[in-house]
Image (cartoon, rainbow, N blue to C red; front, top):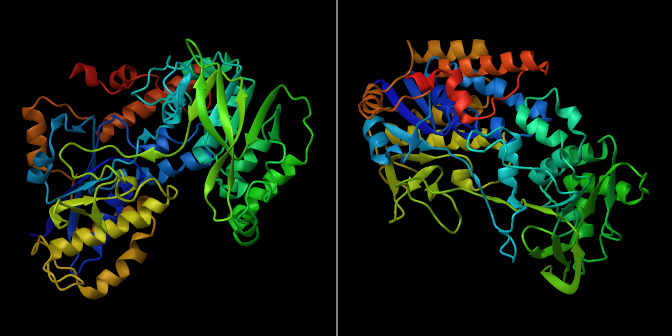
Length: 506
């Protein structure tokens, strides 16, 4: 059999980099083999985190969607949106219809703080706020009414930076972005004038990148203020680790240079203020009917590098709290899941069963595989590793430990090609590249699994095709033109998305 049919569950960066790697690595086989990929997503729109996780004012990062578009437009790739694993379609269905399945659904749930008052009105997960301002179809565009004058963002990673920046910047500057009109209206009416961004550790341990950090200091009409003495590397660190990191780690040194500069500035009296606070641990959120304050405790690192509370407490008069302290993947129906690491148990992308052995035909990529680490581009090498394992398994033959791999005989992967696949997977797709790969792989026509299409039809499931997605894109461009706003404006609800692609009429 020369053709391999693979389902990839998830159309974000991890899923689409996996689809790309399947096409390219299949073309690198000797002789080249056709790999047809169906990319499934529960949403009617592709691109996952790039569309619904990147802040609207980060247009350069969002341009990654242009690259991923090249993957979706490859002749060997088909987009099947609006199909959710566990809701009408089961794991067993996919395994029956495809030669292999790759799960790549990311991490979509916030970690909780585990403190009193966390469920008060006005206390939110940062992912809810991000989904809101990014126009996620699951999020009611009226979810947030920004009537708080002071807000706290718990966390010092890039997501926390995004959330703080969207809260505190002049919303008029977002008018030329793709933010939906109801969200822009809510931001324009926002009463937020002060934001506290809070980290449990110090500047040397913060997870944001220097580029994103610098952007905070470039916001018009915003004073950035660092907590008194909290930029001092030695004041709350008896281990000396903070000072060592600032000397030896280029990333930390870049961050610290920016923070130290801010710490030396006097406020200018700007209309909005961002307070950057370190060495503070949330203890309790207060309020009778809604959030009225946040109590934090001073922390420090002891001589052994352990984080401890000092007993010194401070209450911030905030009316809104957004937690951004990490993300977790959620289980997929029927798929093995480790509740401790919040990942699918795997070995180099091979899904492992309860006995620790690989499950035939099942693979995982992205954050669901390794946890929420790295940047968007990290998913490229991660996907390439998973695909190498998948093709090696389907080619058969002994593994590194001389054990027979689980699904032998479908493809033959020559040893010289295996060594070169990682480098080849790092190339670009693009129009010319896609045509070259298609020709090498012998792809003709649109990728499909006839069995899966028949199954959807039998169950009355009407998926969203790539052509449907293009209709959604056109509707968003038309909306932007009608509103006099930029290149595109996101449709504000799932109903509007369905109407744009005619899904409601099917």
